[in-house]
Image (cartoon, rainbow, N blue to C red):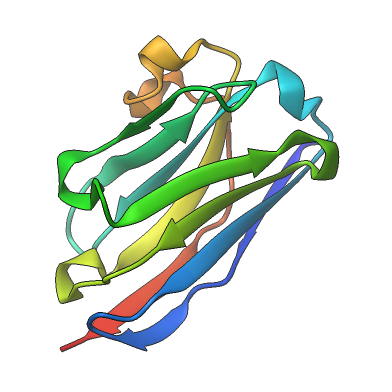
Length: 125
């Protein structure tokens, strides 16, 4: 059975940092592109970042470029999202996800096969 479990969310002041982790079990992580999405209240779940199977290629949505960094440790079956210079508009539930598709499809929510349950990130002004 496949499980993706996020951790590391919380409440932080604007300008602060958080590091999200996503522990994956039941998958050979080396065969999956990994991504992060977020969903604010009343809004759709939007793409944040993705990383290719070997970690060589990363994609980011424009609003987080230069502030967030996605990484992965295939040996530990874990994905990370380092979030710096956080803004109130980053407040959302953050979800990790895995797809068997290549990274070219990674911006599209429908491409993902497995999802975590989400972790809340709240940035106060």
